[in-house]
Length: 215
Image (cartoon, rainbow, N blue to C red; front, side, top):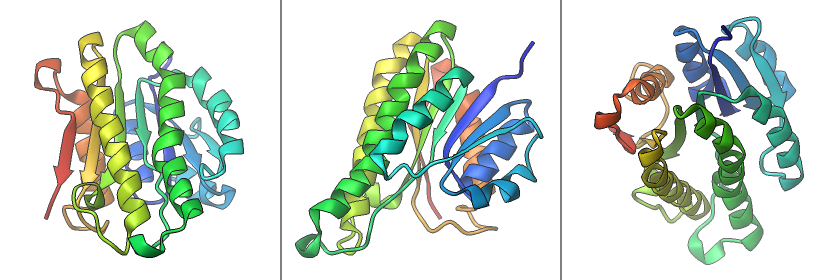
């Protein structure tokens, strides 16, 4: 029997790597979408040799079809969307193109991936779809206007998705990290990974659609 797959999109040396390693420790085979090929050797060193990798810039809409074509055949049992984008700017100085980039990465890409992966999840009748967010989704900050809007949009999407999919036996949730990622704190990559694994393992009657990691 083939091992279950976890697909991590927006993987890097922090949360993405930690979640992939946590699930791999439980027998999952990771497939990771990273931003640059230079990141792959470092990530591969901590994962099973049969893990799969794809380098793609999710800020470029033209790359999305390639990501979808690569990811769909894996039919993952767990999916984590961890990509993020947002150039600092005050609302009064926010340029439309910078907002578009934030929405492309924080909303359009996860929407397209989710819709492409859902047929596989629905055929199996089980699985977990997770989306990492930040405290800006809860408390917007003026200097990070674009990212605040993008993360708020992603949070709303994840919560609405959870409402739609729960009756079908599929678990969707957002992991909101309300602080700066830092090792040996409640915001360490390992703490986020443990929260992701806990969400995946939750019994259906106790499903949560959001976990907020706070100090």
